[in-house]
Image (cartoon, rainbow, N blue to C red):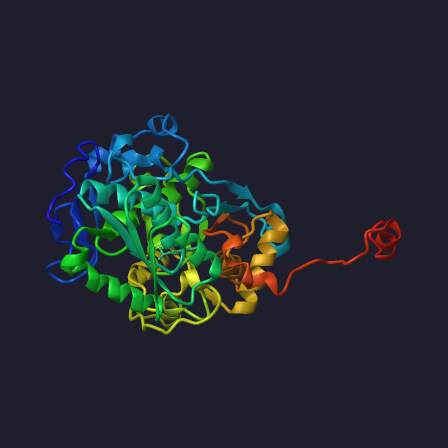
Length: 422
Ligand SMILES: *Cc1c(COP(=O)(O)O)cnc(C)c1O
Ligand SMILES: [Zn+2]
């Protein structure tokens, strides 16, 4: 693809900029710098961003597209490939706060309440809207599960063929949900990092020339979709930024983009200028970013992921160094938790908030607990934690630890004997 995104004349996006050396490139299907091979991200015209108002956003649709004036894809609904995700609940978590000894306000941003039940609908809607404008005619991705669900569903809605690539050992719920939309689902005998490397190779082939891999060749646009989670939390709090946020990390991209969204809102003047601290959550089976932070280095040593938090199992995280930068600059921290803590985190969140999270949400809840216990997170400040996926997709994680609490015969006597009426 050689075309550029010139069609979105009302978008504030102006170029792709290298996160490594700052070199600029046109808005096109390119993800690595020709000078230094660094990753590219979308750069905006500050003046155009500065013209966006709260009123304009509040008058927009009840989904991520209310933030279209802050995204690289313009505001024309007819141009979109989307399931209209977003505006998910921000749940006040008073009982969880009490249980953990948190005295400040605590919230759970429940992004399982999206069309395919994870935050990935946000990134896919932005990536595929860009991909359509760039002329791509097949949609694809390298996925740890949720991304494949979302790409397949978006393609089905748009009537465009899809081919998604997943590790063969994914949870059954995520495999079924990728396949049900009718596209091709390719299970690779290897890890996510193998899948990702293969997809990078495929983008270079003639056979896949017309294919947008949302998190490979159009990755800069994909990544911008995550900003909407940050915008939404600020708007739902009445246009202010919380003091602390706890975010699960796979590639680390989501964390960096929530931080970027907060910075933009301050620069534009849509929220008061405040300090915030960003905290990252990983599992013990895949913790390369957190370990680098603990060691005080920028060098992220790739790992072979293990453990139940499969959606976060990226052993060689593409945005890891930028996640480290966000966390260090904002005075946050990172932690990781083992599988038993993840299961306990899922149950804790469910029991105290009514939110049933997938394993990634269990990681985040358990890391919140750990951060409070270690004193790294200030329990007197306002905190938002992000649940990025739905527990129904990873039922196996807790199926062995929860179940019926009583078993009785269908008679009053039997219920009485079980002690249920006393
Ligand atoms: C993809 C994913 C993440 C994190 O993604 P990044 O690669 O760090 O942007 C978090 N939670 C869930 C459930 C995911 O599917
Ligand atoms: Zn560069």
